[in-house]
Length: 115
Length: 112
Image (cartoon, rainbow over all chains, first blue to last red; front, side, top):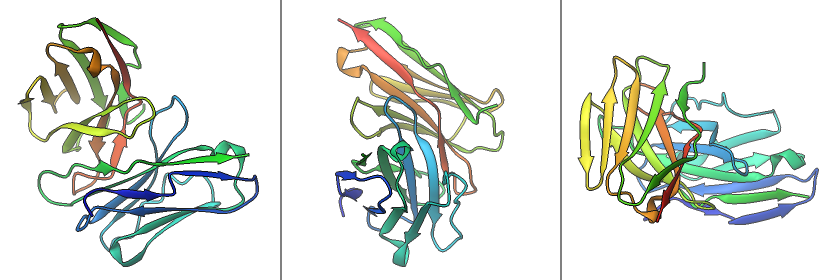
């Protein structure tokens, strides 16, 4: 597609429920990233997928968080047993691995509110 | 030491002035560097990328990189009120120049 697409744009869920956030990267981009941004804070790295390599999961805050990338394209971030501190904007980005012009482009984000 | 550091600001400059934003990074082998602008409530948008030592100019924006000092900066000439935003410095950590880590951002306010 023309840009990184995320869905849903907004999600309100009850504490303890599971949620799935979807990211559709720019076509052909080999790398995909998930970041989290709490209100007034910076970008917190969550996970990085690069081609067929094992993902860098070092940023996932707990085992309630997991992510998959199917067929090297669409990614789903799953948060199990949501907590109020999970409320944030979840941002997805994608980029193309090459020797230059490796810039990442962001989707519009999913605003998650846990009540 | 955090991987990427920036002054949080706010940095206030009068309209028409030059705004200077600074960023330092800890991983000496980093090869790719980026500046993003983020308006309140919006996603980050790419302004500049720089990969080699020296200056890179694009319109009113100039990125400067000094790998020996592990320092990258962004200059905004003729600052406009519409430039008021948070500016994020990002550094690519892996062999592809990716796996980006972001600094905390500097909030810039351009006063009319």
